[in-house]
Length: 235
Image (cartoon, rainbow, N blue to C red; front, side):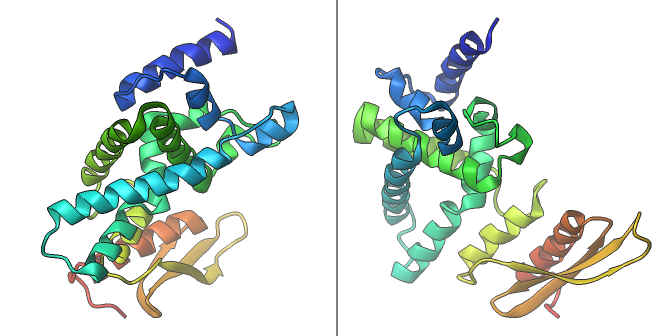
């Protein structure tokens, strides 16, 4: 089976996963064309415009859901809650859950393992934009409901990605994005030990150590989760 046949088959499976089948399959394909692919292959368009539309679609239907369900929240509370639900880390997790990383068409300049979280989040928004154009508001609302159902199973607290969990919890509390800074790097060059501090709302929320910057950030994020949940006092 060549790549084109494999891709067509996987697009069918993707539509099964999201519970929506496109009348215009070209919209689905467009949602999965990254700008690097367009630049290298000379295609007429990429998913950036669909991403723009999908962002608004997501904001609208998440806002509607919160307005109807969270009747005890004021405007500020609704805004913070929405920010937590539509943040990049949540979109990236849904995108990975749907398998968009394998289906996204990219140029040779962007290796599969180099596809970062923001690209995956953009693809998820582009997919929502494509659903809206193809099926209208009711189809888009159903897709956003599916997104919210998935996100609800990942929140709050510890997951395989504590940085994502911490970002969501910080947004819910109106504290903005956590920031990570390297405090020190010690040990021999072949096995360094990183110490990283996580800062939330201008204050240290925890530190962590690891043999890589990423593992140290994860350790700091776990401490940050304990701080925000009240299980440990922030430093």
